[in-house]
Amino acid sequence: MDKDSIVKKIKKHKKQPHLRFRLKEKVETFTDLLFYTLFDIDTPVEENLDRLEKEFDALVAMACWDVDKPCKKIWENYMSQLPEVLERLNLDAEAIVSCDPASLSIEEVYMAYPGFYAIAIYRLAHGFYQKGFPLVPRLMTEYAHRQTGVDINPGAQIGKSFFIDHATGVVIGETAIIKDHVKLYQGVTLGAHYVAKALQNTKRHPTIENNVTIYANATILGGKTVIGENSIIGGNAWVTASVPANSTVFHTPEIKIKTLPNVV
Image 1 (spheres, rainbow, N blue to C red):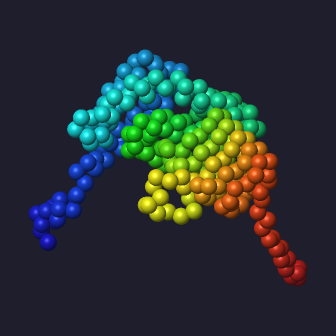
Image 2 (cartoon, rainbow, N blue to C red):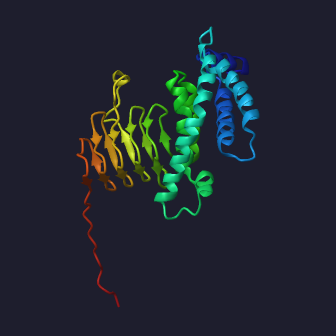
């Protein structure tokens, strides 16, 4: 097959008129700029908000396919919510410092904790998700996912003072509800019983009430599953039904140790 034939066949199968990977790169640049604007002491806030607006306009041009570009109106309202988002993120950082004996300073949390970074990008993306501009927030949280190993869907609802310790492997589904002062460890999944497109507009993921701790590699599934407040879910637990408040749920593995006799 000659080059011209190959080119024609490739063009024939490039069927998505809006698929521009440049959008992904621009979202990542926008996300970094937004994060620095809120946290970096050397980054000028006023100047960067103007720059962010221009960057957002460029995202709208690529990701809002309606001819009237209604997504362009989102920015002003989103910008007004940033102080509240920052306030929530500061509470998240303070929760990490107060809960983790390994944290040496709050500056360390902002700069070195992957769990905090994943939460920050989720909170920044969630505002866009709420405004009905879905692709950009999904690209934002996937950017954080790639860097941290934490997969938080921007549609999840997460309350105050949230802490993800060690972070890697955490999955939080789109319709999950997490209330205040919740702590998760690595490998926790808040997922659905099963995946079917017909369930798109239903609550598929669990609700976690206030002051719950969920230890490493626990899996909690189902939209009707509620973990009651002040409960502790132990490591490796598999939970598919609601748990009353003030409960402890644990998985007991069977451990056998076989010792060979000494060989002379």
